[in-house]
Image 1 (spheres, rainbow, N blue to C red):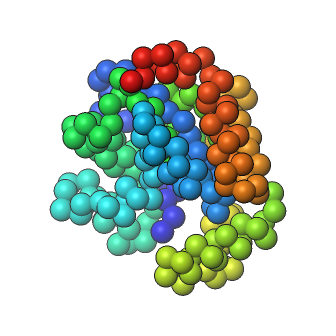
Image 2: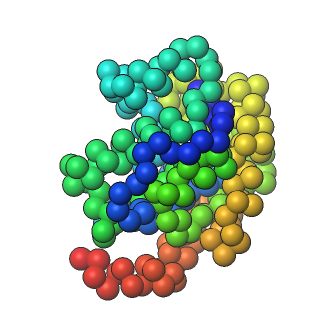
Length: 221
């Protein structure tokens, strides 16, 4: 299922309190952003939130969950404002259960925002510290990774070249413009065709060099 923007909307529920300090894992399907986000999320004071997992674990008995089902059951695109509300509900649940402590933790977001429309809404809720663009110009490598993942997760429909081509086209048209939305100083390009360990080394090295991290690390424990 593809979640893409249907409209640009203002968030109906203004935030209370400071914005969440966030690192964004960004790139085409198959670039490894989920893998890198999960690795970083295992380090204390980093909380990984994968938008795909949020939707897969959604409680359809809730009001928001029922709205989501209304769109998905009709095969319609989920509006940006609803997508962000679902994400916010998940983060609020983490806060309430003390799994995420926004005063000392950094969010690691993967799969959201995935459009300029979502980014506009989320500006009120997140302070983007750095965007890691996991670049993999070799499309054949992306095809290989996506086929392998689909087979591993037993999602055979997602292994077809037609589906993969459509996903990459959606990324190019609707997600990639985010790189122009954020200022150049916030975007770090990482060669995602390298071994995952080297990719993670590049990401972590950049984080350790950031003043906001250096300041936070002094009192992080």
